[in-house]
Image (cartoon, rainbow over all chains, first blue to last red; front, side):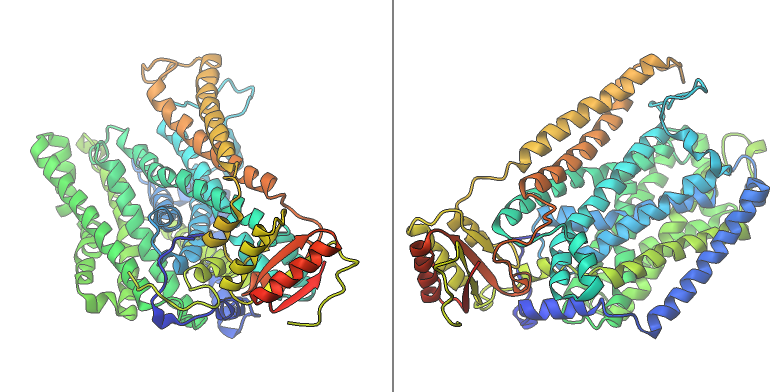
Length: 452
Length: 174
């Protein structure tokens, strides 16, 4: 709730009543397009479920794992989804603290995306375990096995980081929804009114409620900000703490955080473009919002590009034979196609965002965002697989490629994510009613401030 | 705008305002006349209303501080305590290796701090509310503002006059 948010440009000319009406309208019973989309998503999810059932029945042998490469598509996709989750909290928390007014129209969808992306990421460690029914063994609780979590292991840090991230992000999302759910409740009738009454916790927009709510929101943002930066740092240490060539680098934490924000912003664009079209939200999601997201993508793309360059430079300059060989192999060896896909999608294609014409062309941004999603999945694939495929001694070298079981589960993960998002936008406002109102002049006043 | 309500039997009165300025005017006047315990409803938080109400800073921040410190202490205690309890040397590292435990301590600081902050908001704002709030109108979550004032019959009549003079669209007893 950005009470000091910079107002939208005067061209918006919206009133509080318009905002209420237009955003609550998005919760109307779904049309044919939504059901069709859901049917596609559920079909993909069924393919994922079938693939997983096959793996449960026959074991991890049904995957494409090739010794010594036992971290493949699952860990790649896990890191990908954790990365996607990052821009949600960046937009919610960090931009809130910086008082960036434009966040108000996009942050709810980004926050929901964060929560569902972490829910998707959370499936992969379990999928990767193989014997999923023993997943609870990794949880630290008193047991008779004589084993206890090794707190010196980055994998355990990861459990703490991601579960904290999920809890705090979900809390942030739910808390931000309370005043909006109350607004929906007040317009609803029948059973919907009863449901939204419960979900609004009896919120009444009183001065006492706002006073404590605003303080809570500020501190949640303040706590979430270092959390965003820490989570992908911790994920990067899953790799950087190992001595595998291509992983053991101090640059990994900032490199991963920048990459996560890059991919997250890309995914926000991918989601918002169809959302805007489907709900006719052009007055709320303006070209300026997309341009700002594009600028964030451009910034983080250059950081990621710099990180790629630094990795290669240090591999050469460091003089470590294994490191040099790993990086040479990445660019010109068996996995050249993955590496160049990554570089093309993450470094070269986003260069077109230097052009304002491209940044303000929503169709172009949508296409670029798809390339960013692809590129960032490949970045994790390159880091994980090419390093394991080309370790210290030639007899360890191998070639892994995902098979249909893993690709089925990868597809299922996108559909799982999409299913939750599609359900969310039909039950809750995909845009923050209260915050959009805050960015407008209050009733009885006209716009006196310019844009920004 | 409506018919003046029968305030003599009511213990309070609610005014519905269409603009922030009218709300501020009525609120300032009510405060100046010594009305205490005013409740103001607004579709969004407004700094100008807060300034007039001049309420103390929310104690939610103390919940955050205590929660975060508790979380930090718990994180370190959990990692150190259980490592000492289940001694197992790995990688030649000491049983209690503080640098990696900073991660656990940090995450627990954030987690417990955030949950305590939310608990602080719920406790202080008295949520969840199971009963209807006095004078609440569904329009207050859309585009109207509201002020509820309490008092004896004379005070209630005075409050009603102040609200109408300030430009209330509607005044009724609660």
